[in-house]
Length: 87
Image 1 (cartoon, rainbow, N blue to C red):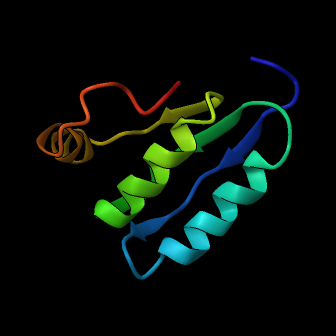
Image 2 (image 1 turned 90 degrees about the vertical axis):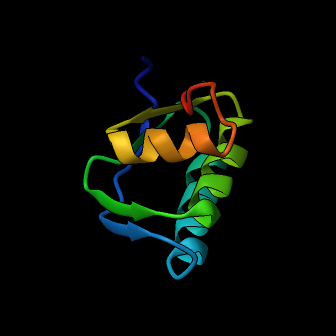
């Protein structure tokens, strides 16, 4: 990893109701150079709105995701996302 790591560690749910704030946080981190570390360890529910945002952020090619729960991994697989969220 580089010294220029940005961390986002949301807590609670990541659903359509939190999507705007989550998107703003991701965009702000991705505007800077360096790796973005997304820690999902303290996240409860995740819906497709949040998954779409994470998948879009993944396309930047510099995001590391940790703390993916078994439930989230199952949802990702059910939606056809078989590649890891980390890039």
